[in-house]
Image 1 (cartoon, rainbow, N blue to C red):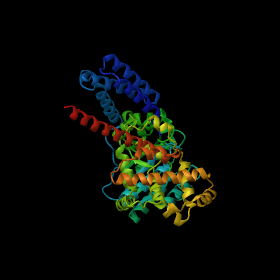
Image 2 (image 1 turned 180 degrees about the horizontal axis):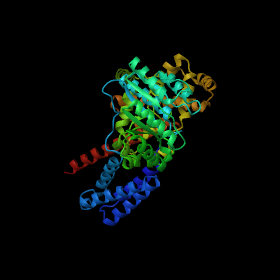
Image 3 (image 1 turned 90 degrees about the horizontal axis):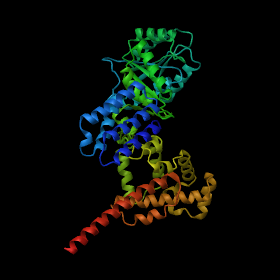
Image 4 (image 1 turned 30 degrees about the vertical axis):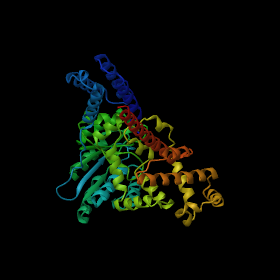
Length: 483
């Protein structure tokens, strides 16, 4: 996940600040120094860093934050607000044409993920707006570029217009737009050629396509992993084409996050979407405030809720809740839930959207290997239909058969079934508001795997909270007796 190093550095700076009852100007200077170093290390543009640190310091001093209540908390708030402002304050939607089609021209260097992003955005519009997009293959230079776009189109069921590699790209776009008008497509994506670097020939071709198509949106696709070079690339394309927005790709890779923090401030162009993953659904609207929260380790509950709403059907959720209350939750239900959670993204990324979980030491100890999920599936798929519905049937001989069928050791099968039964019991008790005996349940949780570890963390927290409440009630009762 992007920003891990930056998040850790900023969190450390803020933690050091929070430890102090009062914050002096010297403490503020030290914190600003740590923030400056963290941002520069994350490959954020030097001028952006300089302006950012200056603004935060002036706001903290100007508002007499150091003399007020909770100065550390107020400084964190200022840092959060300025990060948001640096990245653009609010999400910027796609430009829309008054009449169909809305024409979206995609530009960018080779390897930035332009073709894949075209498909992701087309699918997003199909799913969310019931749109009828079309894609035009105008990259005639890169080997297999047209075939790649056709594969993407086939995968998401979106038509691709192409005339091969021997026709001028401007003519391909001309005929493609005529086809889109005839077919009443409401969005047209023009997948243009890229180069390894900006050159005059590329820019002239893109300018000619722009002059013909009059696009409503020129989206520049930038590889976030290129760091400071991403900002230079954005500046170069913008000078020639006057781009309307940016899509940052590979934000889930080993990137320092400098591009996301610099592009808007340097070019004035909004980041409209971010790509974080290889699936065709892995494209999100860019929300500067949410990204600022994530960078500061505050989580991103809004995105998590939206992802959940997209995947979880309300009626299905009600039925599942009834099954939990009736204690009839079985392995088939478990697989359904697993499928829906996996559609939301990697478990690691989901956990980091929960406030306080990013860079939490518990995250480092948690085994997030996706293979674990595959092993669980293999074990469940090796059960008979009857065994999945009635886990009580799983005697030792059946378990040995399942272990052989799934290719997993018998102790792993036993552990998975034990964790399933414990989780089922826990969910049933919680649905009835009964938290008694949870500590004993935790004691036998047994070990490994993400499911068990997540369950243990959640349940230990509940047990602690329940203990604290009981202790408070007991102390109150003792005080009353003394009176």
